[in-house]
Image (cartoon, rainbow, N blue to C red; front, side, top):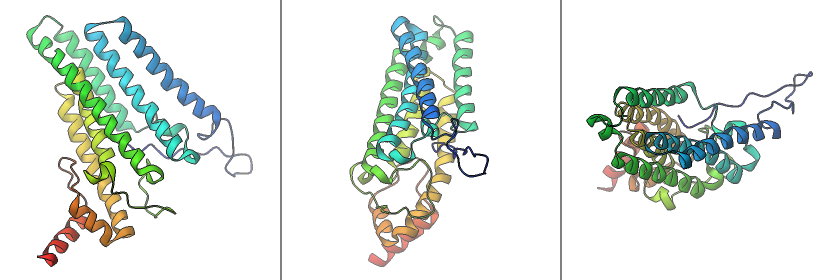
Length: 266
């Protein structure tokens, strides 16, 4: 899950939207989010510099996780500055998201206990190969995600929009000329790569399956809106550019339109 929860609004005594200190848009809450994420990254970066072996592997994962949450806020602040708030850090992402992270941490530390370094299987799971491959996937996935956000500019939003925002345009250049959903693809690569990095043999397929299920639902909603907003222009774009999300070809409505378009052109 990528989209943060809609931030609750503080209300003053008259019942109107207030500017209380704990309003998610307040400087206090935005600063608090930055402090939480910054401390998380700082602690794990320090541990990464001071440790080696399995401890360094976990520290690298923790630092990359903090970087992800930092960049989510930074992207919103740069591209949609009027909408940046505490939830832009995605700290209050969703219960399933943090449950998945807890599962990943549990598997990692349980595996370290049951299969410590020096055992053949433990050494295979936490080999230099899984570390390097996982780190490359994480970096590549995050790079693709933020390249896509930058290409979308003001059209980017953490929340799927049902009504067409003023000034919204269909983005087809940059990474969107390769995949219809490059930011989602980047997130999926990052999520799976993070578990490869940790050597979590169970969490790799679980993170992949959870991503597929989530994006099948999210892409269906998003493409239904884009089809309504842009009609034939989106159909022609979808005909040229694949989804590239594994097992997420796109919404059924868009697929039917593509088939009719191809049939009429034959």
